[in-house]
Length: 286
Image (cartoon, rainbow, N blue to C red; front, side, top):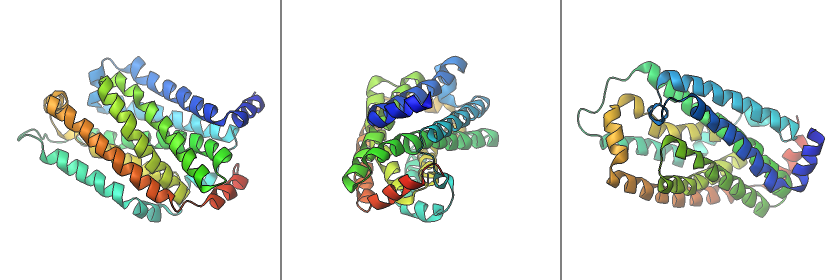
């Protein structure tokens, strides 16, 4: 069966990569639909719920790795920690921006809204953001991007186009946030901004050749937003989310992030070496 699938993949690379993303994201999104008692349970990220959800994310990640092997894009180098510190230093801009994002959110909180954090809840949120990074980076950069690179990665332009296309897949995948109750306008802005963010993650992968750099940076970006949940009263968070000024501010912020991460990603890709990509093609399957 996989021989037939691989023949289709080779002849229709972009469509095949897109379908893999759609299939995995659809299966991934089934979990909250089938298990959550309400949209509120998903948005509140209760410790027990997200602990189970995190296990589901890891199972999905393992399935993606299996497909990577079957489609001949698996390389053990992608999962080694070699060059991790250097890669994280390369991502200093995003790390600093994530810290600033958290501080700004925290400083804007009303008085007496901070509660004594439940460390089990905090730990569960940290694990959840890590598992999000593992699943999404393995799928979008480890599988989709590498499939595209096999076809397009013989030139710098091809590398950039592959990164842009895989990033568009990453953005569109966030349409599933409608499940958590986000409005169409909010989801549309998320799709645009996460496409730009995906370009940045793809550039980090191209420059470092390890998935752990975009995984940890992805985790930090999500953590800068989610970590507020276990340390702030839920009533305050609900009021803030529903406030028209905050909704508008969130959309404006996403427009800003779209510009910033698009530029940052393209700057990183200026030094992309297509010879390294071509060299990796010969190592794929190791």
